[in-house]
Image (cartoon, rainbow, N blue to C red; front, side, top):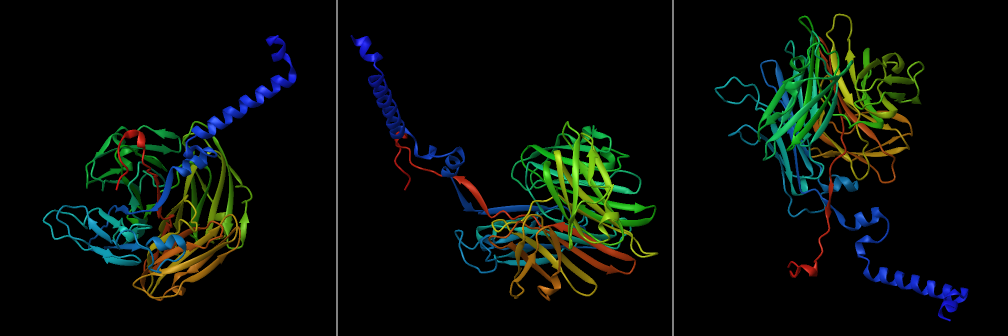
Length: 517
């Protein structure tokens, strides 16, 4: 009789429905609050975004000698830059805080100090020491409180000395565990150096992985490099892998954190061909952009590395002032696994500045070397740019060292790769000037003469995409007229670090401990 009751369809269905309803109610009563919604929502519920309270970067080698001068620049836009109000002076991070430039050499004094929003440039002088050292050695930039979000330091070296001749600019690097560089070489007339600077309190152990035209390079002296706190180690690429025409360098800290930089110098016999820093490139990915390739006469060497186990088929597109296009005959290039491929894009760029867009079926990263030939009888010069991330309204960038004056031109190259962009250029103290708005059409590049933004010969600049704007890439280029030939250097503007995600903390009564406070 009981068996027949269970077999009746109406009774069975009713019991199933009641059982499921009970399970649902039990699950709702016992479900943790943070687990509600999709996984992304749960993760977001367990964290919150707070302003960065401390920042630090390292300037690798401010060279000073009889024919060489280096200027260090420090800019602290403050937390207002991430809201589009750079320079407004609102907000607070537990006190105003400050940003300072200090050599890592023991006993060295402070070089400069700024309070957000503000900026300052400092001419580096020879230290008064008995040892044979030019410059102060590595310099650390540190920011606290409101001066920490978006903190940027930069160095610009101008040299008329033989092997150093040129204009070499670099954005000082934050400590990290990984960095990629595409550029430099170790052939006759070319010397590259890798600078490893430790501004942390713990020692770092670093591995250098090198790639060349023929594949990965076995360089035992580049593995297990120990860098003590406050110290710097330099490795010569021509000592690690002599005879290599072009490099990609992967810097990986297996212990601690390191600030890495690469410098390239070129000569032809006794004739200098230029010197510049190689900007850090994005980690390998399938789609990237290399902005701010300088215009003018000479070659533009696009260098692409595919560090994985698969060959990469890479589609190339150039973005110029007039629009974007695939260069005929260079719309697709093949990069063999583990190698660095080099092609000249100058014939397709018409001597205009361009941005290079790459779409690949395997992860790659890239950079471009510009080799300016100058006029007849003039000396040459080089400039590098690299794959970089776009700026957004939440992650604006800062140019720490805009230069002007007689014979000097600072240009900001802005590219809108996907969607029209609206950008506010905000001078940072001590200059006093209203922001300038720039519009960039979808798929184009705009060159802004920064003398139109401020008449000051030296100032810093916040580059702030407006809310609702498409992403924008920015590169600061400095050109100088020199009696023996042109000077040029380029530096991509990196997205600033304004906020950090931290876990939410809530009392757990099961521990038996009372809530804090």
